[in-house]
Image (cartoon, rainbow, N blue to C red; front, side, top):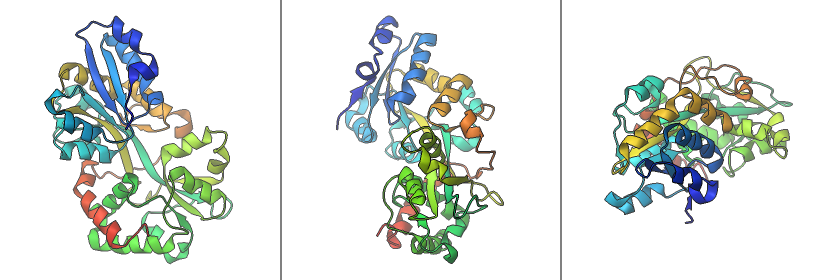
Amino acid sequence: MKWVTCAALLGLISVAQSAHADEKLTVYSYRQAFLVEPILKRFTDETGIAVNVVFAKDGIAERIAREGRLSPADLVLTSDFSRLVELVDKDLTSPVKSEQLNSNIPAQYRDPDGQWYALTMRVRNLYTAKDRLGPQAISYEELADPKYKGKICTRSGKHPYNIALVASMIAHHGEADTKTWLQGVKTNLARKPQGNDRAQVKAVKEGLCDIAIGNSYYYGNMLQDPEQKSWAEAVAINFPNQADRGAHVNVSGMVLTRHAPNKDNAIKLMEFLSADVAQKAYAEVNMEYPVKADVAPSTLVASWGEFKSDQLPIFKLAEYHQAAVKLLDEVQFDL
């Protein structure tokens, strides 16, 4: 696996050198450089604390576990909730008690014991073909309705985004009903689960299916990509379950590591990331929703309209994670 430091990748060497030698911290990040760079640079400019970042697509938990007490990692930034759960389950986190964090981040989007805090939110949307279905007041439950046989596209059921969705269904309906639902959704698939969320929207445009399951921020990013804009324009973005519990959401987040050598500085960064300026920037760059209630989403994201989100506390998804994986295996969803 190739690990890349922020100093080498983002040209932050001069920033690091200008900061006081003792004012530093190290971040391990699943989030990409284009999103992290400007925010961390602003943090360094405001605080004088130099930030070194190590980027990776996977394997961060394994690396921290291997490094043990000698790990330089102070903070981990994750791209989804499952990464937060993994770090907690492997006993690699340290609880944070901060009035500012608890004030900025609603209880629904943080661990009750302070082991992790969410930073941004994304919706698991259902996209429908504009020319064949148009906008739909649809629910996740309806994905199993026989009227949609051969009309649904999705990525692997074992992807963290879909595992979280299945976990939320278990939380609301129990394992037995969720298994029946999964079997119905599988029956309605237009093809075997494959590709990423963008590929599902592309498949709708190409007429392979009429409904695609995908995260909200991909829609925003596709609209800004000249090569993919036509895909996004071919679908309507729908927020499921608006007539009852609300749309399922997932989060990106952050944790303080168990052996953080620069704990105080790391907590300062966590508080900075939870405040207005960083929340707005963090959400806008990747077309996500801020978790801080009084920070507005980007103009583009706001144009999709207001929606009701599922009020199930995010930490509850962890309780049903293994059950979700088990059900996906039992129905052989990806086969």
